[in-house]
Length: 77
Image 1 (tube, rainbow, N blue to C red):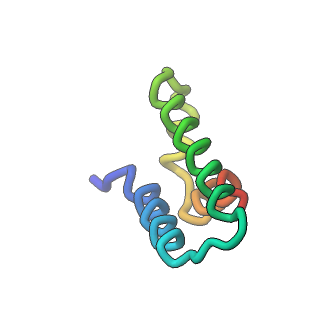
Image 2 (tube, rainbow, N blue to C red):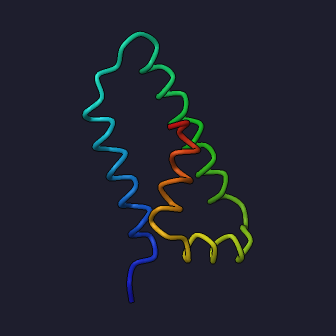
């Protein structure tokens, strides 16, 4: 079967490319770094706790656009 993490890994790749292409000015780099660190902490917290199977099913069933929207919201984009 298909790898259920593939859509999210694609989003991480997209974020990686966006960060590589970004030329930070002013306090932009610090803001982005803080958001990425907060997102990583959230991700680690989710992995450390038992999560609801409905949430997992929701993410598995999410479309690419829904995952983009979720990540954009988390990153404030």
